[in-house]
Amino acid sequence: MIKSLKSRLTEDQPENLNPDTEGFDFDDYSDQSRAEETRVLYNQSSFPQFPVSIVDDFLEEKDRKLISLHLHKVLSDSFMLYLKSLNFHWNVKGSHFLTLHQLFDEQAKELIVAIDSIAERIRALGFAVPATFSELSQATTIKEEKSVLNSDHMISILCESQTEVIRTIYQVLEKIDPLQDLPTTDLLTGRLFTHQKNVWILKSLMN
Ligand SMILES: [Fe+2]
Image (cartoon, rainbow, N blue to C red; front, side):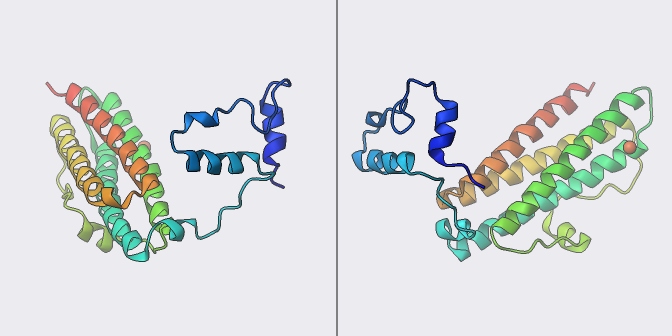
């Protein structure tokens, strides 16, 4: 059962505060209608129930479709990078074997979690995820690596592919920006942070 807002506030606030209004400065709002709206929300007895179709209320179907298509491109790039990282995790050789074997494994594992989040965002936007290998490989520009490479070459190839995903994400963010889909923007911004960190780590391993 959902607890009432008042009971949560009572638990969270010091005893001498009135949980209805104290501890919240409504005058912080320069926009008085927004202040009133917030006051009503704050004082109501239970949490508002979000409708199941919350996404529908904020984004039209054509916009959700457009965002999903862009997300599928990021998903496909990320999946190809995942496969490449796993390939190199398995096949790396040389004096830095253990470091690189573990690093490529960490990057692959992080990617598989991210891929899941991206795919589930497409579902939340109301669309199925094209997820066969051919559908994913058609939507990405990241090339498969068919030959067995030396470790320096693996690092540089991974660095290029990570950078390619970054480029895709920036392009997608620019295209979906006018739609103000904040959860998707947040998801992709987080991906940028991780891919840029990966580029830094990989570049630091280069001679
Ligand atoms: Fe492994």
